[in-house]
Image 1 (cartoon, rainbow, N blue to C red):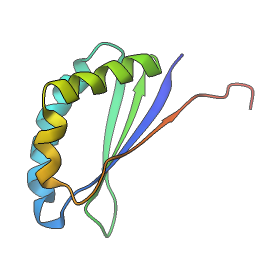
Image 2 (image 1 turned 45 degrees about the vertical axis):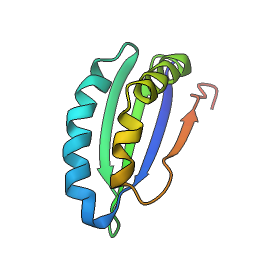
Image 3 (image 1 turned 135 degrees about the vertical axis):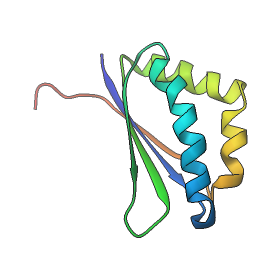
Image 4 (image 1 turned 180 degrees about the vertical axis):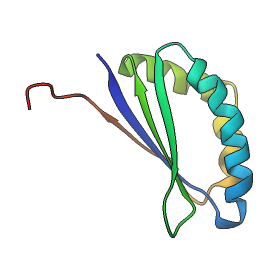
Length: 97
């Protein structure tokens, strides 16, 4: 079942442009990863927060992807660009509403 995952990256204002360059390159692999259906990128007005909206075939696909990103070092590599923790939320569809 498709899930929606949101990630909010609190980028440092001085590093926003550099972070977006790194993210643009990284999202090529994200979009190609098994189970990824779509990724949209937004920057919050008035801040330097970057917000990703992802749809995945399943929560398991997204969890496998995140494990891969941790193992391959991307999460550690982006830490210098951030001013806090990444905020991740997973949403299940409610077709009965």
